[in-house]
Image (cartoon, rainbow, N blue to C red; front, side, top):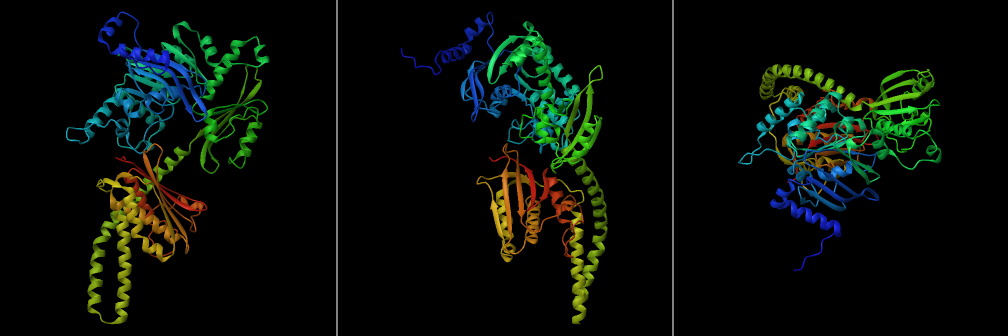
Length: 636
């Protein structure tokens, strides 16, 4: 009998044998009285990102009902390893066996089907969708005739949040909720899968203590239900508290897997953070103190808030990853550099005052600091001393509050616009009736009068009445609308039609319009007429803004995760002053001098886009660009 060779040599034989035996019921019966087989086995796993080798021959396994800790320094390969299971990463080489069955690779869909749930290190939700839509994205409940069981999905979501004891508004897009609430929606999605393997990637750094208490209560319940947990953390106390076994990764290699009960904290820290030290450090008598120092530094570097610690000479001692990200620093090695090389007057508003307070060793706070004209930062500085009151340095806590300020202004503006608009719409309803009567009388007078002078005056009155009717129509569009009759639309086709409609205006001014879009169809749910109104308004604004022979660019792009689509309208016209941009969506505000411009166009556009759960923004520098972001319905 001839047997074909197995790829991977002895390791391939071992994996194939395990796969065959696991399927054999007699072997399963025999194994109940022997060593248990891991529910997940990963052997000789290699993953590379271009030239960077993230994982190099890593072995990892998880048993049913086990909480398996995963530790290592930053960029050790922890997140890459578990992303293989969620379908976010594909291996270059190696074997994966799940329940004894060989898996070439997981996809996000197959991971959900296999009941593998993961909470990522960064928030992984679709911001334009609400809580229910996020929880059931990729696992929509369908009835027997193909309809979506939205009521059943909503009831299940309510049940999950009730068990979690959190209050989440179910109809609000997640981008309008706090990060804490978004994270709880992400956890609810994981729980909705009734997962057999749950992966938590550094969640203690992003959840509040109260939310972590709920997670800690879940872990023993998962063990009782024979569910497996992979728990990534830089906090050794956490690992000792919750894990049964722990695997240590270092620079893409597995340094070892140990039973937690056989370890003490110092030994685990040594395994995780020890590496070749300088001769001076090796000569130090207090090796354990050095390792604890590295451990504490690692905690600081992984904190979710930006932290910079300065030495007594105001040089950078530690800057953590969050601060590097917030300040958009390209040079990752800032050790021993002076703080004034980081906080320059060109980058940070009030930099001189901040540096003065640091030099004076004063505790101080700034709630709103403009950084690089793009971000709003919150900064708190305070000096710290030892027990003998000797000055040791200064701690700087940095928080990016740009989104928070944006949403505060957005909600205030929305509330103000809504109040004024509802009042105006009510007045408009009352004006509409007598206005119609006046128009009828003007029409009758024109028929009776043959005098040319009278007819000219009546025509002027009629034109002004027509303008009032247009303004009233704009005001009425702000009144509380019934739910828009949404249908599935190909946005590329819709924009093609808009360009065709405006082609005569473009030719009149000899303008150059560039229409860039992807070749594939791009689908959204929306009201066709309302969306056409928005894009016609934006392109007409550009046509009016540019000079003869000017340029307009219409572009459509899909986000990398294919969750939303962005349409941009850009022109090289006269632009909008910086202090004016923030007012352009307010009702009756206009930058145009023509008497026929009511100032309602962009307000109505914003109203329409927001009713589609989208966002419209504007930026004006060398060119003026309007961005319209809408949620995608899918391309199939």
